[in-house]
Image (cartoon, rainbow, N blue to C red; front, side):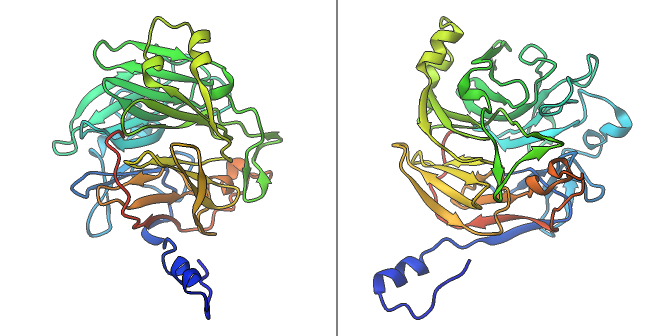
Length: 362
């Protein structure tokens, strides 16, 4: 950030001195796409199959000496050799410590956003929840019932015993009932989950090949009181719906859609977070900034910094720091007309020590 000097106005000087400051918490020559931390300070990261940058685990724990240890072990990180779809990571797209203290992993299987349908006998999308202490899986949920051949299961949030997922490939939300294992696709192809407008990053329309990129239902957050789900396609805008309506199985999809309300006209977004006061933090990958949006829908710029190139899945730590992976997704080969990556290594995870109130819902 650039700070002005010689400011005479004491109010202006106070505003400058209190501006958020980014610090680097991790740098890598491999692109990471998610970070999550336990209350005791353990740090876990995932590395996408499209990231490149050499060999290493798909899922890792960052150790105090700066090294990355495969999590839970090398076997789970050896899909290319084992091809064991149920006991190895295929394409990890999201990770987070849940309110149950488990480390939840969203594995999209052999799927692509907006590409060819997944192979009929390919690795299915799945959720795996690990006990961070024992490193053993507690839940393994195969998502065949809630997905289609065009699905790309993207991200996860929690509400009581309901798991809420976004489908970025075949627009919908997916609900999983942890009590009975039932999976439901809802709001399929509704406006609120469908990317209907160009995505913009660093001043350019995001393209894949010779067509505009489309990433459907992507970001989602549950309010700290558990009553509201906020969600959106990556292009925006953001919508909201009561979780009570979301989980009401007596509502038809059309009736549920009528309960969905417009919340905020968000820009193209890489990632979000929500604090314990219900404020949303939304990355603007076009203008390289993070917006802070109150529960009433009032937005301000939380931080703007040229280093925030495609700020992705953000995380609020137990101490109230906002962690921001800046993964440069728009610069990867997939989104270049000539297929050549423009990523400037290293990629970084930044933190803002903003003393935010951590959310109860994750």
